[in-house]
Image (cartoon, rainbow, N blue to C red; front, side, top):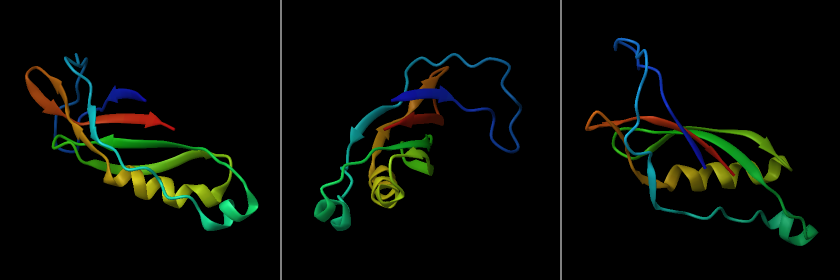
Length: 102
């Protein structure tokens, strides 16, 4: 997974540079369910997602940006929404961080 600090949220001054002391760390993982249709057809798939880990370690704004088959997207997005993280830190404070991964 790749992580990147987010620009300031609405109402905050924009950051000119943000030094991340520690990236978000995955603590709770949920595997996606396998679509029944794909099992019957013996098809496999992959979904790449973008999401934000907020200051509390919750996943928000989950989006699929690439997939081998659309039937795999909904289960992948549902699983990622269940993930929990130790939030990223900058300047001793928890920060939101955008992330991407399969």
